[in-house]
Length: 461
Image (cartoon, rainbow, N blue to C red; front, side, top):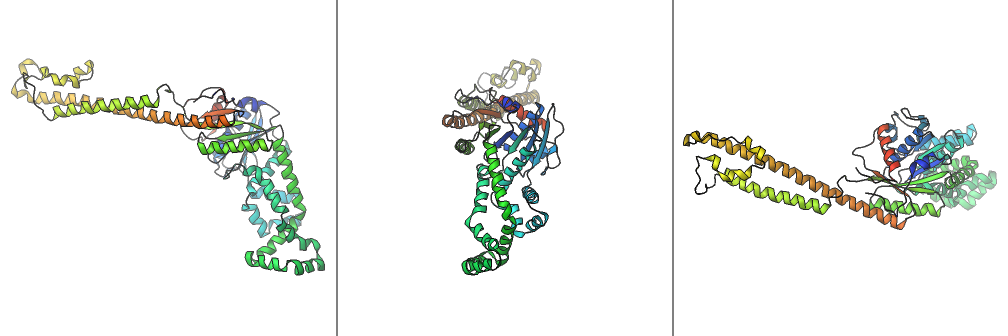
């Protein structure tokens, strides 16, 4: 498969080499190779001289395995084995630990302890909807503020929708600003008798109902949490807004990763439109795991027809061979004692060179007592015919496999062409599928090489 002229090539090396590029965000639907793409980009950028950190939010831990690290955590770790003048670090987001760090950094020790020990906070930090995506944004902001790396590559969370990464800060901000939270905060803010009076007059019915639905202890935990977090809510929103603006800045580049499949490219098209609406810089589309063929000139139709011809010919030959093996009638004018003149044996020998393998009888030995040597000759001919049939079957099978591969190529090309027709402005790089999974730096390097070449050359596999 090759890139159409309508699809602009995505040039990876100039993007990674540009010192103005400080953040690369790999996004897309689940299962399309975002983690591998992010790691491969990190390896290539480091080997070309950048000081890189790769932040992954993928719980599968494939990144650590491929980089030769026993485990990844919330602290960037140096990756050994990088060939080049740069450095590569990798880390995996620990959602709860990141939340704990925020609390510890923005609250005094007593209040921080009260928050960290609060049951509602423990549930919120471990699994509240959108918390993982929000903490990914927080960690990105932290890494950028430290300025220890000149390039940050982000592997976005494996969410049901890739858009969750952009929506999470707003959703969490809406939760913290919601009427429910403000109502629960009101008694504590008013304090003393006024607070109790407000609670007795205005909230007794609501809290009674919520206590029945959620449990009285849970409701008290929520109120305690909100009281302790009150001074921090503004900081959450401020940092989320700052990180959101950072994603819109010229130094950020989004790479949408997709497989050449209908659902994945539909999600990619939706993400491209959303990035444009949010005024976020899109570098291009990485079309991952593209299939190719070194015999693309042989179409699926021709390969299938050739396979059918081989199989049809095999059936005819097999019937002739079976007829002889069953001891069919000998044609008139021939002698059973003269196998060397038995013409029906000749077509069963496919090549001149194979005739020397067939034992022949001397004329003096052509007697009725020489039946055993004659049977040996027939067995040898049958063996040659059987080996020819096996080769034909193998060839036909390979032709059918090629026909199936060409059908896959055609389907992928149609799917990609529909995307480029809708978004001709999006630069595209095609990455050929590897025969196996990526388990080490060499595999990541191979992916990076294909990715760098995928926007400018045709691809085969």
